[in-house]
Length: 296
Picture (cartoon, rainbow, N blue to C red):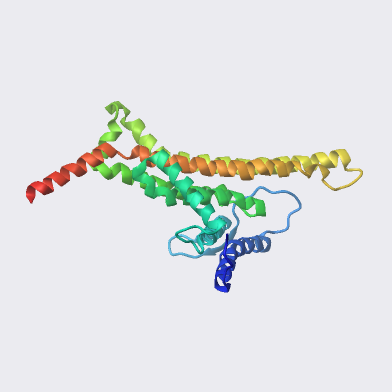
């Protein structure tokens, strides 16, 4: 049974919920203020809100950047809400939900990356949550940051740095030798494959999310024209646009967006764990330990 909460606890909950709702409300207001009037449906990229003048190159602050921070703040608020008042022995449904999420996340990371990488659980879940909630912003009429290649490329570069870091764990020489496997003739292809990793991760995620948005808009536009063609003499209301775009939104905005988030997280796990030369790393570590013992 949940006990009666104190006023301080309730105020903490209100703060967490405000941290979820207010950034989204701010994004909607910002979009309304900066979006010019339009006579029809448009497919546009992220709008530039303002530009910061820099010595080398100007820095545009775009809709994608602002909405990314909105998602980060909303996720922070959600995490604070789920963990607010957490105790050693669970006495609330939210704590049970939070523990279930952590347990499932640890299981996914452990089964795909191995016990050595269990500490990666927060990072993997952060990527998955950031990607999924960024795509779900379309449900409230905001531009999804996952439809901007710059945002996805930033994530992919971060993942690529981690992949390279773990590949170098067994030493730079071992890393360079891996390019000549299984034969020296494969070296050019292995180098191309290495560089192609962040590129493929970026375009796969970006392309799937953007294509879904474009298809939804094209179908909505087509239904508008078809509606005017069939019942245009009776009414100007686009009757055929009712229902069908909403059904498409369930797939493209919810299912497809969450699926792409899961795929990006899975690829992150597989690339990092697959590139880590575990046997060579522990063999090198053991060799160093024995050398230290001999010196002592």
